[in-house]
Image (cartoon, rainbow, N blue to C red; front, side, top):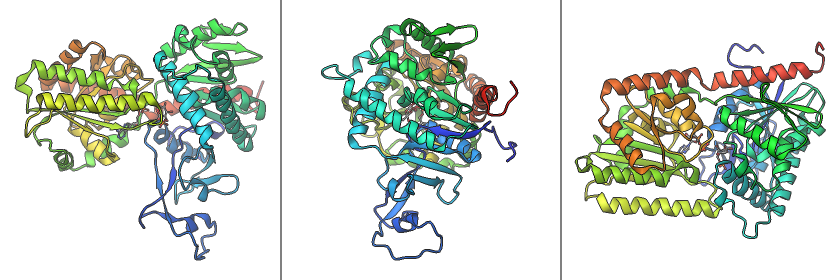
Length: 521
Ligand code: ADP
Ligand code: G6P
């Protein structure tokens, strides 16, 4: 009831995202948390023998977005609507496809949307990730459609947006705050507006960059994307530049829209959409605590598993295997450092943890092949019997080991060609509790806006300059490293997840009380 333990939502909260916070899967062995029979039984007393004895395990998909919002939705006792992509998801939901989560705590309702294979192919792999993702990350060449005909994928994108809008309308009241996440739902805001009571507020956070008008011109159905987004009362971006580009696109491609740059708003079709800019933070305190509580030996024994010497100077990369992350560019810079610095051979290791992502898409498959072959080539060029300069793994590393690696690494290398925010940069800083690590950060990330001046800034496409920054990090005196890390830690703790949520909810509150059900006018 009270809001003394964090930011509170001004209405009843409904979150909409593609990725769900909890996924139910069949476990192979008996280690699952509940059996299909238990999960289905709503009465705690029901002890029927069920024919289906496969156990079900709950898994939390990787990603800053879901991990960050979960505690907020818990606190708000809200509703979260997302794609149910787990094998056992619909074994644990009721008739309306709802289940309460987290398991055993029953804090909020997760309403899962069941998507057919064709819907997933066209809406998720197709329009979302082969049109909007490369477009917004300024990779127009990767907008892949053999015959250039997006009509089928866009029709599915529309259909799925409609299904989510329908689901929202099942839960919405006059006091609802509908909070939509990301590029999977550009059409949904306008659809939701038509289906929910007038008092409900619709806000949207666009977690990825917004492209230039020149690039946006290549967006299939671009006008409809803009119209859909202008169904929102509020539209959020991480940094001012993306919001300004959004306004540029509205001006250029939507003749009837009125853009007010001073007020940061757009009037269109009888509605007003206010733009807000606020960079998302992480739960810095919890990374700090987790990093402090890991045994120092843990990183050593983890590295041992990969034959990395305990006393190596360690540089770290942690990313989804995505072409926006600049991983091949990073490998080229590491290679340049090895060429120029024979004295570091045997003393330095670059550890790259990569998580395969969206593997159904050719551009992602090609990237995986390129990265693996580059690692092999560089290692065979410089490696010896007892030292490999690059350790590359796609194996799962759990949160505790991730914190151990963040704490242990002398430097973190983050080199995206374009990245809306980049939470990994902040996770490294919050976990660097010994205070002497160096962050190398591309200036094409949202994170660089706030952290840039205390990082070693990278231009990922300039291999020589990138290599020089790595050399600077390798030789930086401890006092300088501590001074910079101290600044970084202050910024990451000041702009943490709680403060981001607080300011999102403050903005929502302003709009919500303006249009609220029984308010002054
Ligand atoms: P993106 O959302 O584009 O993947 P971010 O850096 O903003 O990039 O967020 C990624 C989130 O996923 C972080 O919370 C990070 O800890 C987690 N993550 C990314 N890659 C890995 C990995 N290889 N292993 C474990 N966690 C990862
Ligand atoms: C980025 C996007 C998120 C997405 C995440 C993981 O952070 O902004 O919306 O959830 O990548 O990608 P995936 O396709 O696995 O959900």
